[in-house]
Image 1: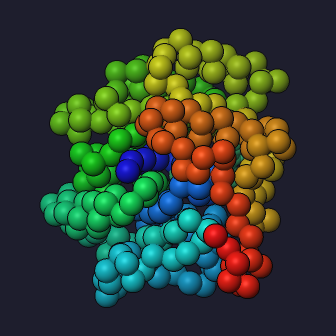
Image 2: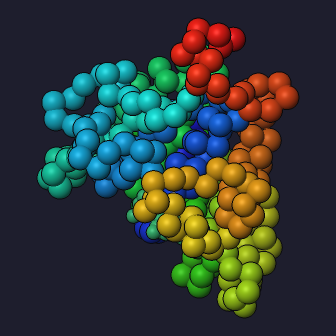
Length: 273
Ligand SMILES: Nc1ncnc2c1ncn2[C@@H]1O[C@H](COP(=O)(O)OP(=O)(O)OP(=O)(O)O)[C@@H](O)[C@H]1O
Ligand SMILES: [Mg+2]
């Protein structure tokens, strides 16, 4: 099953927010999903309900196998936190992942071998050892940019597939690269202009656009995710982004007739199918 990596040359553009939502929406639609955090900020777990004080993860010291580190977040949704690391260890880890890509590629290959499992990875901004280790395995590399001038300047590099640099890494990822424009505000002329420029410049690589929406900004503070697309705004855009990704990757429907529902009480009573 597929590996989807969220990345960006820029920080603070919504990678973690979008990765968490895509993972939760896919799980709600019936796909077995693992959300993997490769960013030493260790923040993906917070979006998925892991308590702030529980800082352990895949790269914590001492290392533990991923199967012992993975946490249940919701039905069909598991999260593999990065784990808190001091800055020196964190820098060393990046170098290790470059020199020994199997350290992360091995566990991810095992996750992808689990039946019907989608793996979603949240990468740190810019190039990183983890991203370079996973590019050969990835099916889709989602570059997140904002609907602002700084991001607009990067559109030609998205179009050429060289947004994360030149050389072997960018050549390998070019075919897998798609872009999401985040925080689009259609009532703001600049935002509208960047959306049009993105559609013109990167063409088919533009896989989705997500509205600037205070509800999405506040979701983490409210310990909730925007999973109900009928709310409109970013929630609806996230559902459409998920549709586009499912289509691009040719994912087979997880549960015929829509998402499987969970009737927790029936499970407790031993009556669930
Ligand atoms: N569509 C949106 N509308 C409003 N706010 C948003 C939207 N998307 C993300 N945000 C807010 O933008 C901020 C940055 O989001 P997030 O942490 O997901 O970015 P990031 O790219 O993962 O950052 P970093 O590079 O630090 O890992 C957060 O406060 C988030 O709530
Ligand atoms: Mg992040």
